[in-house]
Image (cartoon, rainbow, N blue to C red; front, side, top):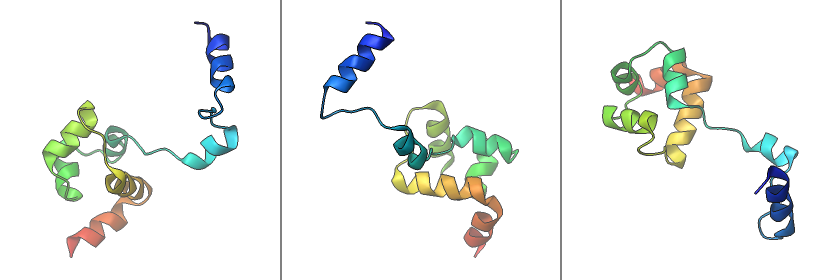
Length: 92
């Protein structure tokens, strides 16, 4: 099936319409755990310890064995935006 045929098929299904550009822009993406960790120049063990996440969980996320749940997705977004604030909050 060509890209055009797939697109036409998607448009013909009223219950599964493709997302609009505006919807995609509002959706926001969860940052990749690996990308956030690498940006902070931390090993998996350092990242896990700093943000109180089990090391096995960080490994599973990075290897694709598991995906972060909604709460973890929010935490990752906040870590990506302000890692120092998260680290300070977790120190106490």
